[in-house]
Length: 62
Image (cartoon, rainbow, N blue to C red; front, side, top):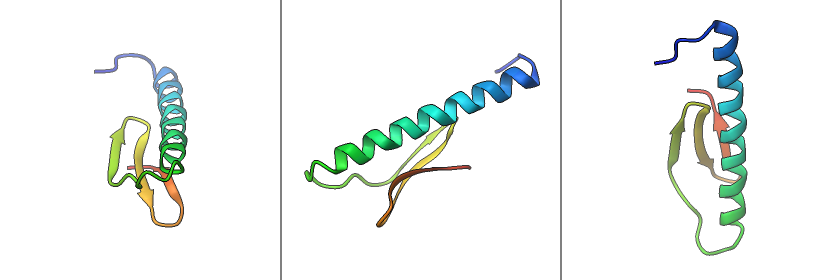
C-alpha cells in the first residue's frame, strides 16, 4: 500500500505509465519479427497494455 503524498503518487503513476508505454513498444517490435502476433492484454499500474487490430500494442487507462 502506497503511503506517500499525493504529489509522490502522481509522480509514480506517471512513471508507471511511461514504463507501460515502453513495454508496448517492445511488444510491437516483437510482433514485427513476423513470428506470429501476440494477443491479449497485460494489466499494469500504468494502465492496460492491449493489442488493437491494425494499431498494435497500446496503453489505455483502466
